[in-house]
Amino acid sequence: MDNFKQQQIETCKRYIINESLFGQQYDQLLEMMQEMNVELKIDFNNCYLILAGIEKRFYNSKLNLNRENYLDIFAAVKYLLVSLEQTYEFEKEMSAVNYDSSKLIAVMITPKTSKELPIPIIADQIQKKLQQQFIEARQVKHPYLSSITLYSEPIVSYAHFQSAFKQLRNSHRLAFYKMRPCSMQASMFIKDRQNVKLIDLIPMVQKLQQNLLDGKLENMRFIVHEIMLSLKRSMDVILTYDIISELKKMLLILNLQFRLDFEERINEVLRLEQYCAIEEFEASLFNLLLTFCQFKTEHKAAISPLIINTIQYVNRHYQESISLYEIADAMNVSASYLSRVFNAEMGVSLPYFINELRIRKAKHLLCETNLKIGEIALQCGMQNVQYFCMKFKQLTAMRPQEYRQINQK
Image (cartoon, rainbow, N blue to C red):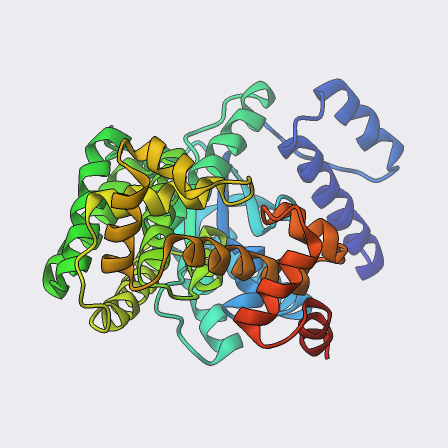
């Protein structure tokens, strides 16, 4: 058979495998195979599926690889399988899985004889080849990024083909919790999963906040690690995002307490999608907490529960027309008492604190949106545009329009 014909057959096979992975009906698949006018022999009975690689975003952001690199890696795995085919007597079909931010390689393995195939060995060889290719292509071994290769149980018919792939894909998505060079059966990848509840982790977040306020770094490191260990055991994406939400609330409160300007950094550190492994997230989070500790030493006064609750209330309602009396009523104290305690603990008056928060939010809107000045004033809880501009200039030494122009430049 000439090379052109062989390439045509391989292209058609890859297309058919892709269609089958994503649930194409078998009778429609047969029609497609007939329409291609080439001889395709694909047996979906008594086969295995292997899924290997890393997410597409890590090719770009972590390894700085491109489409050409991916094709080279795909070819390297293909040549490996050609040699393994002869050793272990099987037929292979390959497909590039390019969907849902993926850049994985799917391999269908069908035995040629009645002998049992050593699928774990074949998968392990694929994993090692991929890991080698990632390192060679980038010239750097990323500390938190590995190739993970998962394989299915025997697939007895086409009816089970797509569900087997779905299990592989769902398990591979959880690589964040178990990122290390490995190859294993998909069902084994999540067998150690534990039931962890949010209610069990919230007290740990509260302890973390107290230890941060007390400046106990080793305790902080231990608590952060314990939280991450619990998330790792759970392999629960929803729980992970719930904890990120709790951490974000805690850090935003501290940001206000210490009158810092860390909101953008908090949002960036807590953006889970950028991390390939939970260990990477843990390291980044702890570094952020260390930064808070360094600034906290400059803020000597202890913050009472009353003022913490007041800050939380202001953060929730700054977009409304709130007054000292309304806040005091919500805190169940007199306005004069709240004003006195707030001044003593925060070093500024409560109205000044509210205006400072509003102007900080307005600066963000001026930089990130094309909203008119009046619209920004309203979104920040100030009904009077002239008053907003006056306060903005008092706190920034420039008018809102000037601030926007400078930032745009």
